[in-house]
Amino acid sequence: MSNPGRILIVDDSRTIRIKLKKSVEALGHQAAAVDSGRAALELLATENFDLILLDIIMPVMDGFEVLKNLKVSSRTRDVPVIVISALDDEMSSVVKAIELGAEDFLPKDFELALLKARVSTCIEKKRLRDIEKEYLRQVTKLTKAAATLESGRFNPSKLGIRDVAGRPDGLGKLATVFATMAQKVYDRERKMRQNIRTFRGALLLLACGGLWGLVVPLSKMASLVEAHPIGLALLIDVIGAVFCIGISMKRQTMPRFADLTRSDWKFILILAFISSVINQVLVYWLASKLPAFIVSIVIVLEGFAVFLFASLMRTEAPNLRRFLGLGLGLAGIFIILLYGEPAEMATSWLWLAIALVIPITYATEDIYLSEYKPAAIDSVALFGITLVASVLMLMPLAAFYRDFIPFDLLTGRLGMIVVLMAVAGNLAMLLFIALISSTGAVFASQNAYAVTAAGIGWSMLLLGEAIPALTWVSLALIVVGLLMVEPKQEAEEEPPLFDDTSEEFVPQLLSSPTE
Amino acid sequence: MAIDIGALDKLRELIGGEEADLVELVESFLEEGASIMQDMRSGPASDLTAIRRAAHSLKSNARDMGAAELSQICARVEARCASGGPTDLAEIDNAQRAFDAAVTELRMILNLGE
Image 1 (cartoon, chains in turn orange, brown):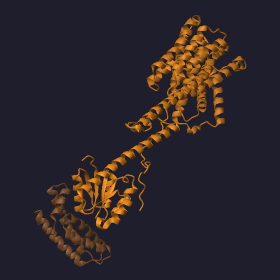
Image 2 (image 1 turned 135 degrees about the horizontal axis):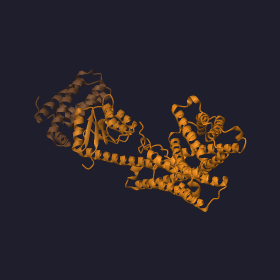
Image 3 (image 1 turned 30 degrees about the vertical axis):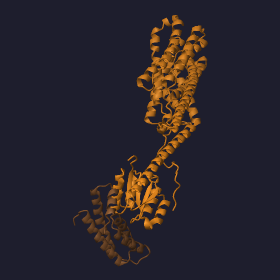
Image 4 (image 1 turned 90 degrees about the vertical axis):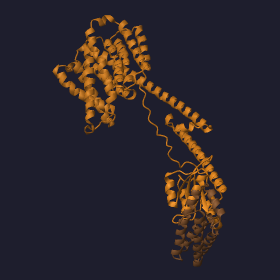
């Protein structure tokens, strides 16, 4: 038997069932037999058949009723049916059955040759119909994939056309070409988005670094008037807090205190401690002990510390290119260190050693911000609350060390410097929070290069130092390093999974039979 | 002769040529046929649908078994019911006699016990 099929026999007479079953089995087919229309429909709901041999006259549910039910379900609609009839007086019944969708008829006292011919033809037609349905299903899949591609939001590995591409025919070729092109479009768009992120990040980073870089020489200038590191930090945080909370109230982004969770408070307190109490006070204090450009140079080591932390915590992927980029930036700084003004440094090695704590605490702040910043709270409001917390922490310290800045000093040159520091420092911090949220801790940590470069620049400008040619070379190295450590790849939003579950889209080749 | 041997040979060939399969089929006919005859005789003569369906079923089975006379009688009973009756009770008696004769002969041909 070249083309065996699964055949369902439906007849209320046991004798006829045995005869039909043994006959089709003798032809090499598989057969199952049931004694009623109801039993046939039940079996068809769970099992697949290539052909149904159906008696017309049966009690309870006759063959016509069975035919109507078969045509309703998409599962059984295309299973061919041969009705069995005693030709002598049932011609009108046969006609009616064919109108209801039956494929053919077989007289009850059929000849072997006739049974063989009709069964084979029906099974062959069913096979061709199945192939055609599968083809149409795959064409529809491909069409859907094309529509998804046009919508612009897609993931090439989830277009659901892999099986279509596996076809050895023209449609398979079309699907393969389509899948390849979809992959190319996807890669190109992804690359473009990444470039835009890098460019935006770089701009933000330079702005942030330029502002922050101003803080060190300014704090040096402040210390030249009179050194009050804690008092300075306190004043700057008060100004920042007033501004940030004022802006947040005006924009109505201030969260209600009742809405802040325990972990939000934990974040605020830890950030206030690291950012204000440790970093700010340390920088202002060291600025009074070391030349401003040296403090700025030390800050660059933050990039390495963040990269190491992020690699150890596995929050961002370290790779050779990013490592080389950081190295290049560092090389630029060392050129300044070695060929800059070594004479001035020699006296301050102890202070320099203490200054090395700054990049480590900056890096801790970076990682902490990027990993734990509560997403639900507006950044400006969050920073405002943090500054209030900082002020509350700095107050007792300032009182203990009697480090408040005397009021009469503020009316002079120092007052001006404090205002400038508050604007530059707080604005830089807000930009930094935005930078870290959009580009990740490692890229944002390159902010340190910009801070260093700007710090050196501002130091020379504000404190009247000349800029050697080598400084420009090192700045170029820093910029190249910056571009090599590109921002972390943002996870692409998952496009919806391709839906290939519906089968109703298969167009019906047979027009629906009517009664 | 109530049974056409040629029809039985044809039936055997149709179901694959095995004597055991033919025996199974004939035994099924003997059992089912007796039940149908019982239905035809015991049910109310006015239930034309039931008698018609019974006659229809027995007609086809009898033809397969080579019981031409029984098949023809059943066809007449069926046709009468189809045209609105009334049921010809004498014809049903004829059917019973033809069935009994076919049973006896089939048992003999296939060496079947009682």
